[in-house]
Length: 258
Image 1 (cartoon, rainbow, N blue to C red):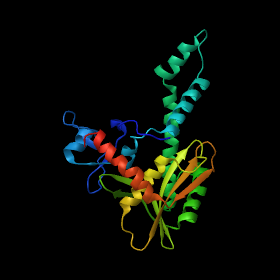
Image 2: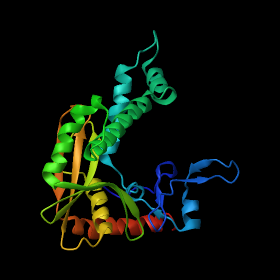
Image 3: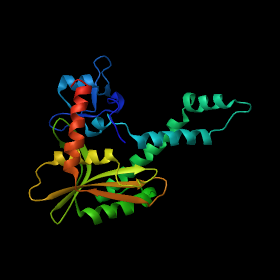
Image 4: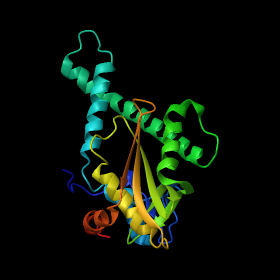
């Protein structure tokens, strides 16, 4: 079960102005160089936390499981020195050389490249053909499920938060809000709760769409099995927002004294 566990991490937090302009960095007064925005900057300027920043208040079992997989992979693939005791080997690999961080960085880089390539394909642009196995089926499934592309990378501003959704599609009076996620293993039982909360926040922030109805959809792309994808659509996003995300916003503002 996902539970509230901690406040956000400064290094991973994203902030927006109240008009929706990204405020990810500020110019340091002492250095004159860009640095990541801190919560103090956000307080001083009245900036809004991103949806993903708010969601970092949640414990994420799937993320912790992935970290453990990276640590195990590092131990299993790292060479052991002659005569090196097991505890010294583990200490060196995980805490000195931190090889699991290298594995994680490589996984994140692949996910970032897949995400960018799918967006480029949606916009009719050239993309890295080395990623074709990840992209082609994903691109086709988005259009098959959601209809014609309306926009990618759209920033929306909600009640005390903002965020950037991956894509909007529309077909026959139904707008679909998409979030694309790469993962080693596809979810077995539908979208993770954090992913549903993220999409619900975007749907609520999108606001008035005239007569069109809104649904949300996660596209999961497997990084371990190229060509394997999973789509989960959600019509219950309003309940998810009211009972899940809105209280989380209250908690985030209270916990971080905003």
